[in-house]
Image 1 (spheres, rainbow, N blue to C red):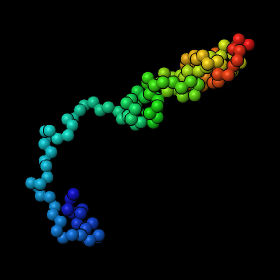
Image 2: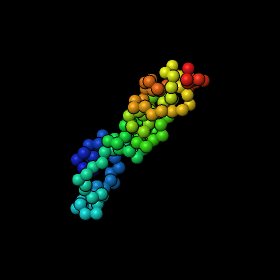
Image 3: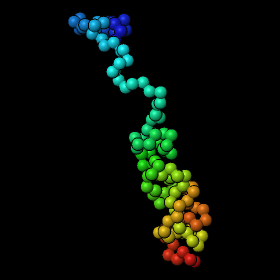
Image 4: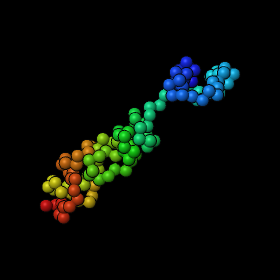
Length: 126
């Protein structure tokens, strides 16, 4: 630390008068050889949620359960695998109640024809 910055702080808070500041021989000189990672022209974007997918690939980089290849949770309104849609319950008769069979949706709302958010239809032909 620069002694010109440190000295006023020491005067303000008191100090141990036996403090020794490093001299030029005590400080490693940065020559750029073998110190830290080598410079790179390519910088990878960060992975905010630490799920292995960076912000350019991950559709929700604040949720580690959401990333390309993640398992979809049926009809939860969340695109876990970043494909733009959700997996919905299949609704063959269009009454808004589906079965346990699933269908891929191109959006996460599960309210389009043939899709349902619930799987409680006991007769999906009526």
